[in-house]
Each structure stands twice: as C-alpha cells, then as structure tokens.
Image (tube, rainbow over the protein chains, first blue to last red):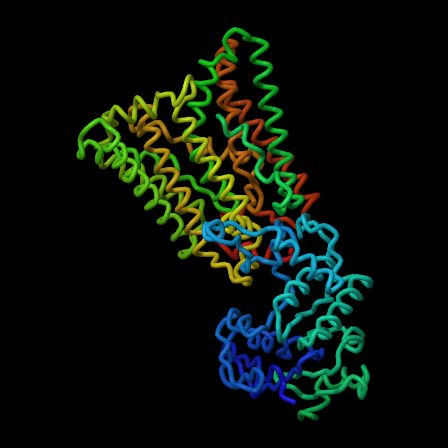
Length: 252
Length: 363
C-alpha cells in the first residue's frame, strides 16, 4: 500500500546546526501516526517541511507515491494537507465561523459576490455541520474564539483543519495545554478525523496520549527516524528508551 | 447627520456577530446614550436655540468632514494601525485640487469633477505610500504616518508658498460646501452620510472588512490561512488616504480655503472620535457607527457650551476625560471577554506579525 505522504532522506541545516539528517517518514490514509522524540529531535522541523512552511536542503517528499515540491503552505493545502500549529493560529476577535472560513470565504452568488459580499449563512451552516460531525463542542458560533476555553479553541482549530484536509492533517502538540476532559475531546476528534480516511500526524510529548490514539509510532532522535512501532507491539518503556537514543539505527 | 439613524452596524441575524463586536456595539450604544443625554441637557438649558434646525445644521456640517476621515481611520485602527497623516493629506489634496481646478478654469460642475479626481488621486497616492511603508518596509505605522503628516503638509506649503488658496469654484462652495440638498439638509452632510454607510457595509458585510478585523486580531493567523496580509494593509491605508483626499475637496468647499494651518489637530480629533466610539486601539474591534457618534460628542459639547455661556475651552477638558474613561472601560471589558490581550499598542510595532508572539496565548 502506498503511503499518502512519505518523506525520504530529508536533511535540513540551520547554520551549523543539523536539524534533520536524512529523516524518513510515512503516513497511510486513515491512520494516526504519532511522531515522538525528545526536544530538538527534529519533529517540528520535519512537520514544517512536510506542510510547506519550510523547504528541505535535500531529500524527497512523495505524495501518494509521486514526488512533490512543497514551497509554501498553499502548496500543501492544495494537495489536501492541513496543519494545526501549536499556537493554533486563530484570530481571537473573530467567531468560530469566521475563523473556519478565513481565507476561504464563501461569497454570495453573482454581482454581490464579485463586490466582496460573503454568504454568511452558507458559512455558518458549513461550520455547524463540521463541528457537529467531529463532535467539537462549540457552544456559541457567534462568540469570539478568544473568549473560549482552550479545549474549545483546540477543537475549532482541529475541526477547521479537518474540514479542509482531504488527505493529511498535522497536529503539533494538540494536547499540550489542555485539561483532562478537553484532552479526551481532542483525542476523540483525532480518531474521528482518521476514521474519515485522513492520515493524521500527531506530534506529542505525552506517551499516554500517544499510546491512546496512535496506530503507529515513529520515533525521532537527532534528526532521524530511529524506530517505527505498531502500537500493539510496543510499550511506553520501549518508546522512552528509543526517544533517548538507545537505538542507533532505524529498526523497521 | 443621517448616519445616526442608520441601523447599528451588524444588526441583522445572518451577520456573524461576536461577543466582542457585541461589546463594541454596546459601547457605541452607551456613547449614543451619552450623546442623547448631552443633547437633552443643552436642549433643556437653551430650549429656544439649541435644538433648532439652524443649530443642528451647523453641528452636522461641522461633523461631516471628520466623519469622512473617521471612516478610513476606523479601518486603519481596526488593523492595529494608526494614521496621523489624514489632516495633512486633506490639506495636500485640497491644494492640488484647487490648483488643478484653477488651471482648468470655470466655476461649474465640470471643474468640480476635475478637482474631485485630483483630490482622490492625491489622497490615494499618500495612502499608498503609507500602506507600502507600513506593510512592506515594516516601519511602525505611528512613525510612517508621522512622517507623511510632516511631508504632505510640507509639499502643500511648497506648492502654495505657504499661503492658503481661496479660489474654489462656485459650484463646489455654493452647492456642496454651503448648499442644501433639500430644505435645510446640508449637501455636505448627505455626502458624508453616504460615505459612512458605504464604510459600514464595507466593514461588516464584505471580505474586505473581515480581513481588516482578522489582521488586527492576529495577522499571522490570517497569513497562514492564505490572507494576503501585506496587500490588504496597503489597501486599508490607501482607502484611508482616498477618503482624506475626498475630505480635502469637501473642506475646500466648506471653508473656501485650503486651511493649511488649520488641520494640525485634525488627526488627533478623529482618532479620539474613533476611540470614544468603541474601536479598540489594540486592533481587532470597532465600528464605523461608533466612530460617527464619537465624533459628534466633541462638536455637540463645544456648540452647547458656547450656547449656555460656558467657556468653550471646557469642551477640550471634557473630551479628554471622556476619551480616557471610555478607553479604560473598554480595556476592562475586553480583559474580561478576551483573555491574554496584547499589552502593547500595535501601531508602535511592525505591522502584521509583530504582535504574534505576544498573542500566542490568546489564540
């Protein structure tokens, strides 16, 4: 089976610092892949490259088996890949609906649309169904995102990515700032997204969350993937030892 | 001004309203109440002169030009910017329009039309300069527009050798500046009201308005969502410049003079009106409707103080106090409604993206 997204031998230098030294990565459609590793292992750099926010020094990115050039986030979005960054990138003064459709507004038909008038109703309906579908708890579609809880905001960011992503979603530390209940909601959301056939790449430091939600776990260490495990075949102890460099070579 | 009778900005049910925009509308409403109370007090004290057609006409005329500037300023401040150059751009555009109309000759509407094009082009040019420096060169808006405040006035004085031009065509002075469109309704106020309504629709109904709010709220989020932040900022400053140019022509008609020395307080008065009207100097919140109310208050106060025999200078004291009080209350409310607000005024920093680190917590 071809991976929906695959990276081969990605390298990236920042000055003299080698952030990635020949990293490999792959995610299948409809699975949740956790990307774990210690601070500075290269997880975020890899995701930034795969989502088009940065370009690699060398290496190959394959999308559905074909090599692609990702020079901007727009390229990645055009392929159906969305990213939820750690800071969520929501506009706090805007409503969930406005955030959902920011940059992708539904315009009125005909002349009014050409004059810049938006179809608010269509966008509101679309947002509501997207939030409902993913079970994101957004109580007030008209409230401002900035006034909502961390869990709701996380839910909105994930639902927005899920609504637009056709193929792959990157989630960078989606549970880092959340309480227990909110975390469960987000993990549940992640499962639902992958259930729709989208590949989910889940970056986290939390081993319990990884073990709960991931199908496969890829471990990075010093800019490379050093191990890939199926969740069923691994344990937290094994993951932690791989993260801390106990394995020098890629296992799988 | 008839704009006060238009429905509050985002009233209909299909407009996505947010709690913050509701708060800002609430604030606009409270300011409206303050305005009504002020009018009521003066009316009670001077029942025979204050609420007369003649007096209302004067108040509305005096607000009309500020309102045109206020529309553009509201957009700029919502993006988290500021435009100190509007007074100078108004003068510059008036000078250019006057010169061109004199060169073209005649006192009729054709001449006015030529002047209109000249004024709009002059204003637009300054707006583009402001916008490009803010968005592309990343110079803080306060500095950019302080620079163009100085430069535009300097150019106006170079062109005129420092002497006011007073030869606007008759059609402009008699029909627009002092004329009535019907009965005692001054043309200049109707023209201004049209601009205000246009601004309200643009801000609350269109993608242009949404992007204006989005940039003031979190420019980086907009950028990642595919909004062309720099280009939109340029458009917003260009829009403000265009309106300042238009105001320059109205000013020429109303005062029959380019008022070179008379506009130094204009940007600050307009900014005060915008802030009193509930537009946040931190960006992301605001309404044109509020701005119009906020601009009426100082003018009504001044007019009323003169009528009741209080020294009109008290108006400046009261407006200053109202301004600070309104912004203070706004801050308290926003702090409650929106956790993790910015603590630094955005127009002091680079446009688009600067505040993004300090905003991290709020997204």
